[in-house]
Image 1 (cartoon, rainbow, N blue to C red):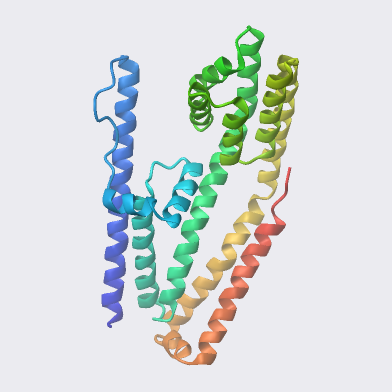
Image 2: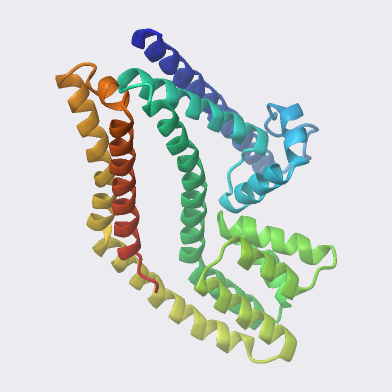
Length: 312
């Protein structure tokens, strides 16, 4: 097939993906605005408020499978307002666009490689979104511990204090605590509700906070003093984590530059010698060399990320 046709198809698919993402962002913003107007006006909730879901038939079929339930669990930990069906369609469009673009700009051999990288990137995006949400939640933990300490010092029960914290804090802490409050309202124990939250947002700081709350609820100890001390500790850990991220920012940029340099070199070779990548990947030795080079670039990326990962 003509490379220009492949390039046009890839650009069309990417444009369609951007249109879908734009519509999704617009619908989500419209729903948030409607919810805000409803909350400020203190009126009764109108029927049918919320964003209309797309691909409902696909979503229903996907949720019945183990793969669909896995996607749903991953999305639940990221806080994204996307259904498994919508996420799958977006990923397939992105993979198809990357496949056609790589085949048109480089060589047909790079199409499947770009597709695999697209699938890996989708999973990496979910992991990054989950980590980002967890980091935001960790930054709110000192304020959360302070609110719980003030509420319990005022004589309120722990369940009531969690409900107050859910109303006072912004997302993601407010959303997660609202889930905990809903679990407690339907009869779940504090251990179960807080344990589910710790599984959704795994971090040492949250585990310490949950352990403190659970032990205080069981033994009836001095929860106010424990939360006060924990607030100071969480503030110190927050500052330490911020300093570490600042020190490692250059290393993280280097990790992403390594594969970018490899891609840029391929584009440069194909620009200087048109058809060189086609001839190179047309032989088994050339394909093997390309796969080995891609493996080495990936290994370098992973090693740099691993060396720059410091547990606090």
